[in-house]
Structures are given as structure tokens and as C-alpha cells.
Image 1 (cartoon, rainbow, N blue to C red):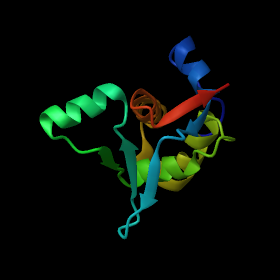
Image 2 (cartoon, rainbow, N blue to C red; image 1 turned 60 degrees about the horizontal axis):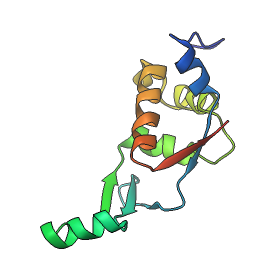
Image 3 (cartoon, one colour; image 1 turned 45 degrees about the vertical axis):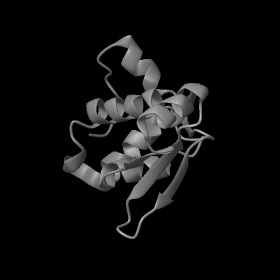
Length: 120
């Protein structure tokens, strides 16, 4: 897939230039199976009230799949999403397709769950 990225719209094109950073609130570890588990504390005032009322856990845990784990490991506060896409393409080849649609959707999920933040 080499060459220049052809973004579908201006929003996607700009997002590829962003540099994702792991949130300082997130704890993560690599499990025995090689996959990353992200652990997000539920410690806001509202979350604490909800935990007491509904007996929910104090941490939110998400186990990433192999491609998600790979992407997570590439998020270093230096690489742009475009650069991460190139590494995903190189590592997963055809399995990564449709690369940009999948990666941008995944990055947005990480952002919406406050697992990452963006720099430009």
C-alpha cells in the first residue's frame, strides 16, 4: 500500500498527523498470552457513587487483541498516527486491510475511552 495517504475527508487527513499519547491515568500490562490489558481506574466522584450503588468494580479492564496490542505498543508520544499505520501495514500486511479505516476507528475508540490523548 505504499505511497501517499489518500484521506477520505479533511478530518481523516488531519487525524493522521496527530501524535497519540497514553493517558497518565491508564495502567497497562502484558499478559502471559502476549496481549496488553488496559486498566482504567473508576475514581471520579460520579463513578465512586455508582460503584457504591451498583457494586461495580473500581477498575475498568480491557484486553486488546493482537493488532490492538501492536498499535498500543507503537503509541510512544513521538509517532504520528500515519507513522503507526505504516508500522501496522508492515507487520500485519493484508490482515490490516482496510488499514486506515480500521486504525482511525480504533484510535477514536481509545480516545473516546480516555485511554489516549492527542498532540499535534
